[in-house]
Image (cartoon, one colour):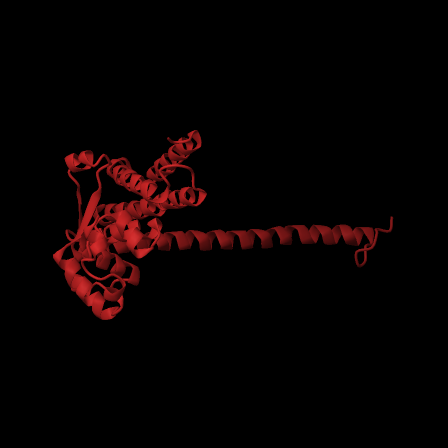
Length: 107
Length: 159
């Protein structure tokens, strides 16, 4: 069912960014250059479609880094399948945000 | 060290998020606020300088906060959709609904619509006929007065 979901370019970019290791809202914004008013609602819709899932960071980790806890997002199995389909639909997607970028690793 | 103006701006950012959170119902509000405040912290760190003041940076943070409104609206619409999907008053197709229930719901809506159309038609007919009736009542009286006064073609009566 999820493989039948046709994503918009924005949603596909967000999925690609998540796959590349940008796992929270602001990092996705930074990577894609999309405004917050686009990224967060798109992520809500993706979560509703069960293409991504969210989890809260452990408070102890956030406390150690002296910052508020983040909500992390990652792809579900259905999300990965949909992303594969989107890559075929938008061939420049991977060139735009290469998977496992160094920038994401440093976050 | 932060300037008082910067502190005022931080309060302003928080107020924007607070206003946006009012669009949500009580249940998801707390988690939503927690997420946005975490993201706001990140945005402030990334966009504003540690020392001094940057208008462009502050503007970007405000822009970031304004994005909370479409997000809250999106979440709210999702909530409304979910509520409508599972509400008994508006039966629609859903995981726990049978096709017959949906048809029943549609039939109810169609019935309501029919009743509303009927009412509108009745009202229109009533208005039209009452106007005709009024004209019929008024016109002969005017004609009699005009004839009595000897009025012709809208000129002044010849008394």
